[in-house]
Image (cartoon, rainbow, N blue to C red):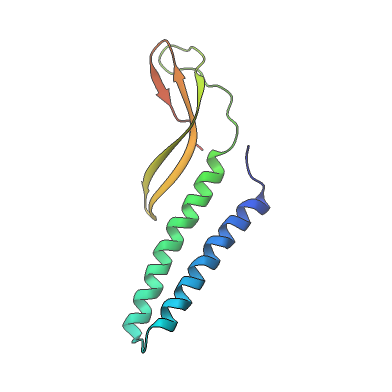
Length: 115
């Protein structure tokens, strides 16, 4: 079942709030931060935020219901085998996604429809 825009926004905001809290705590623990220290913290947060936002958006796109597809090899209807978790390397980093997995009994081929 796909999530609503409000649910996706709430998930994104929770990720952002967590990173902001983590960043503020890190700054409070440090006695004295140099400009380079601050820049390192900001770059780390930017990278982490990019990964987390990508994961939320990719996951939201892959939750949409897909009718059981036809096998590209033999044309038979493929059967839904549940959700499978995968790690995908993207430009923003490695993200974990969970997508529907389909299987053709005749060809013994699996398929993950694009999200």
